[in-house]
Amino acid sequence: MRWRRSRGDASHRDMRIGLLGGSFNPAHRGHRRMSLAAMEALGLDQVWWLVSPGNPLKPKKGMAPYDARLAQAQFVARRSRIMVSDFEAHEGTLYTVDTIAALRQRHPDIQFIWLMGEDVMAQFHQWREWRRLASMVPIAVLSRPGYDGMARAARAMGWLRWFVRPPANARNWTKWSAPAITFLRLPPDPTSATRLRLANPLWYRNPPG
Image 1 (tube, rainbow, N blue to C red):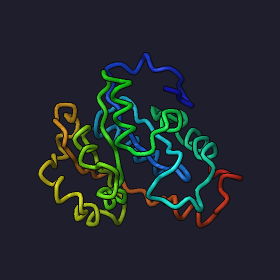
Image 2 (cartoon, rainbow, N blue to C red):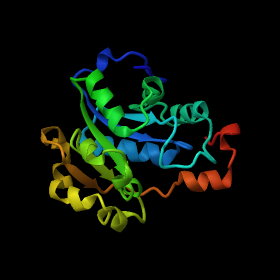
Image 3 (tube, one colour):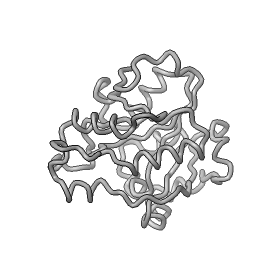
């Protein structure tokens, strides 16, 4: 695996890792705060940001160059236990289900949990083989202002509701058998990548600090 902040992976053995995937267009303080709060709530050793070369569910128009998105993610994640990875670009995986399968094969001794915002949960049923994905690793849904009702009413919850685990037991997620999903109430942060792009469409020429 290649890392932009820490190359090599020998020290990752037996770790508890949260995976947060996305376009990070751009990465911002909301991503960082959400990741650090999830790290505390779930007792994680690290959170890995998997910067996607291209999201099949998002239009290419308005998508900043991959290297710029990766560099901005690295900047936002600095001085933390957030690791920024180009794993998907390096392995050539386009869909999350394939990324997780590759990560589990590469790191059989690591405990992974998938992290997603409530806004993403609303479209989870559109993901490639989403039921298989949910059966591979536990999922933690992270609160986003204004999306609580939408996430719990998501189409995918018609199936996932049978596997909901209480957030009070979230630190014991390594004992759960997937499918398993929990909803974490985290400190709210209104920062939005969409609003940042609207304010500065060419942000990658002058990345936000």
